[in-house]
Image 1 (cartoon, rainbow, N blue to C red):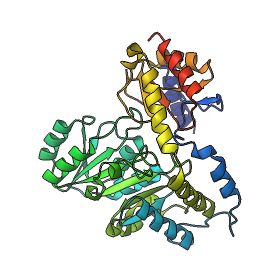
Image 2: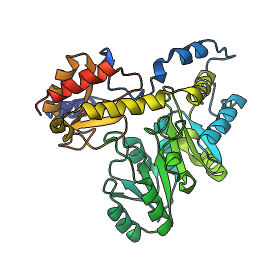
Image 3: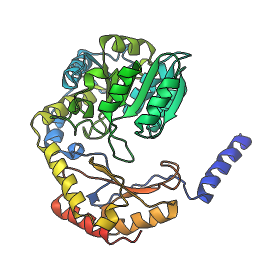
Image 4: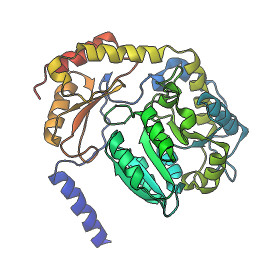
Length: 372
């Protein structure tokens, strides 16, 4: 045990020395510019009120979906999700992380090739470690590099991308990637985590908005962000669902979500039918970008999404900039190496439908005053 303890201590000491130790914090400032609650649904009083009135016959689901955890409540939600996301079928997972490692981990055999965007989320990369296929990264959103590597790829080909990238906030060129996939007979898997709830007419995601959903093999829609809830679905064909029920280990070997979570997701879908929060979010994004000075705007990664990233470079410098903003009551967190590439450390700002004009004005004035 002593040898293992020493190893842990050495690795923690290395992170402290290099100034990238991660630590948990309970500090929350009054003006939220860091959470993924893009529509404000996590604190929506209407949703909270409706959820508080729901009564269930049991607290836990008692087992995996394949044993005792399945229910008509869950299967009805999956049917509703399939309809909402315009797919043949949907399979519920406990989180976006579970969905990605389950789906990606069981797709592809030896001799096949998965080509993934270099900036793909950690959950997607962890799924790749479980897959038996060969894996090749391509430069972020670079169609020429993707085409070159598709030409070189062996076996069945699968392209792995996000629709909106979690740290940069930029869009994948979905229509162009679909065209390449058709040219090279490749399947596409898209993680829609940061477009779910805010793209499309009712929040169906970027693939629906761009009209390419029917050309995509599988889409992963997660509910911990704009939905303000928990869980995720993989949407695709009936055959895909049947395959995942048999081969996705993060589905087969985990306890099902409880009824309370299923009721919550149904209430959120009801809210998306009538809310104007998506429109308000887009207005707030436009207001934010309009009020930034030309000097500071040049340091932001181009993005039309709620994710706006100001690249500083260096863990210590990024921490200091974030602290300046936090002193004004702005809940903004520094994103440090190794969460982002070395030299790309940044202040990641998340805008919300619930941010007021005064809050956005204060944010922009504070950013414009920075020297970076």
